[in-house]
Image (cartoon, rainbow, N blue to C red; front, side):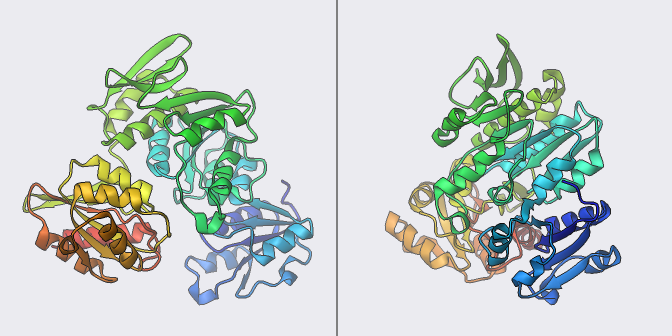
Length: 453
């Protein structure tokens, strides 16, 4: 896309919107950044945008914002269904996402990672694996760093690891990674997308533009993901904890392995892998397969797989108090992610859950809670529904504790209850927006409280 002399409207004053506006301005566009929130509700350095010559429009967004606009760049937090974007489509104004903008600037190959759960761990590990072979590596996207900033920083001769969410794909049309890994697809973001079919379609857009020169890495153990092989032109490689293949990544004799070209290459044993839990074996297989297809050698991967210890807010060990370990899993913003956390431990869990309720079915989650959790501490606006679901599945009322919108009370309650060999786990199975600005803020608050005990 040519930006010189064009009139660009960036919609959404978040991290991606700021980056898109600045980059479009840098490449010669006349840029306006708009957000439906009032200016005093916007976080970030607005002064730097003004100094760059970017026009700022906050508050109600009427169609007059589109007058003379050549293209609209949409932040992932902004749905394509809002009236302003619908009007742009009707006026045949080009609508693209910041991710697509990044792709158009990219001069190095992109390895993209998507899925309901495990994206951040897999993308971060993939970035580390790429660093073993490339001098210049970018890690961006849904991981908190704008992808457009990373592709411009890396330029030519490097590699990009991109975490991509379903939100980022709504306004994307020609995004084409060289490697796409799809980890899993379970119910999430249904308030935004409406149905599972639409949600899955957003995931599949990642490889829609790929050709036989590209690769897609699919979770064979997830039926929905496995079926995606029928809808791609790219070369398919599977990963699995349960099956083996002629082309793919899998467990063989408890060792993470890659098969390709008639050979099987051993990486590390499950015990040697730096990140623990069955879900992290899957994440590591996906990352290693993607890195291999990006040209990283088996020999260079092995030390990285041993040394990588995971990411903040994902089953993150905080500290041990009186023989009881405390874990921060604030990134578990849905039930499937929380289930994976519960499965990591043998049982005797003091679980802090709840938050901004996504309204998903709780049957499977609460069945595992009944099996593995000794005490259930519930916070936020989901607490009552979670309590009702726990009681329905057979959890004893005396083991359920409602603490309102108070993380300090939740942690204090956990400390009063916990005795070895129990563990305390924050794994909310909910978004955080009823109490926090995001799961990162929730996790940091939890850690501060625990470290202050």
